[in-house]
Length: 366
Image 1 (cartoon, rainbow, N blue to C red):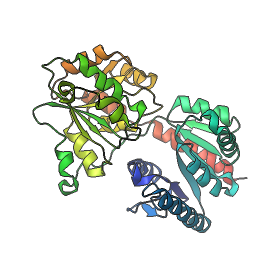
Image 2 (image 1 turned 90 degrees about the vertical axis):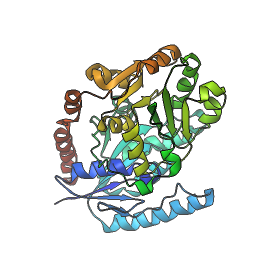
Image 3 (image 1 turned 60 degrees about the vertical axis):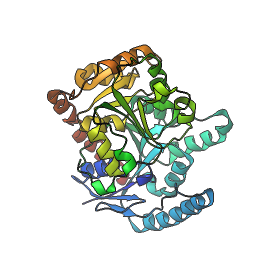
Image 4 (image 1 turned 120 degrees about the vertical axis):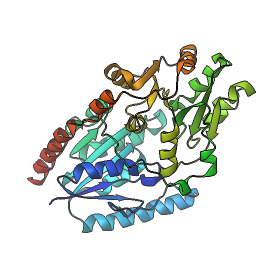
């Protein structure tokens, strides 16, 4: 059986190990799969260090050690490689250039971060790397597909809808911190805004909508994740006492068991994003059959047009409509079972595996 290595330089530092497990379960049907990352499990080898932790010096040393260890691994282990790119960042460029052998590398692009005018040289390097070091790209976003084709029109770009999360929902109570338990209010509707807090998460709209909230509103808005771009200082700290009472906030990394606990206990998932190309968090919410409050991004519009029971939508910046939606929410209002079953029937997985097989067959025949 052909060996397949999935390289994830982020791993447990940002919860991507859940996606690694999903990829492992998909590809193991046809390949001998091993995940290469910064953690160890039944399917993953800890080849890399978690160079996202520590002070700047520790991060640089961790990255250099990871490069050396990965090169040693790469030259020992022959096979097919998939690299997961999270924004086409500088770190992504490093690992892609380390895997130059015969252009048999496929890059799964989760996002493409915009490049400012001051980083034009990086844009040139990035475009060269993506044009000449990869045999194909995979993306879950049609918008990213178009941007990739503009960067590297000669490479194959494979679009496939986001794979469905099916991980075990059982959590270890002993792994959940008291402050996470304290986020949930049993006598209120619990709404969850989850993940690293960036400007694009839409916390600003949620906070501002509280100005129009009725005094009878009985919601608990849980904001759980690292405050990456001073979003709490920018949006939450300016609220008055009446408006703050609707929020329970934890500025911290959330571990797996805590994530499972919060998704199980929440009543609705908040997705008020101002910008997005795909949403793994949405798919986790669907896995729990939780309804969602969407902003009117094209990606979400398409989902809600097809699956009406998935939730509610408001126009970005329309704070009165958002407040009105929050006022009509109720307990035990979940995604319909028929639409959930329709969504998780992933017929496209077979087509995706066949497309990937054709890419690798073509490259190995050269």
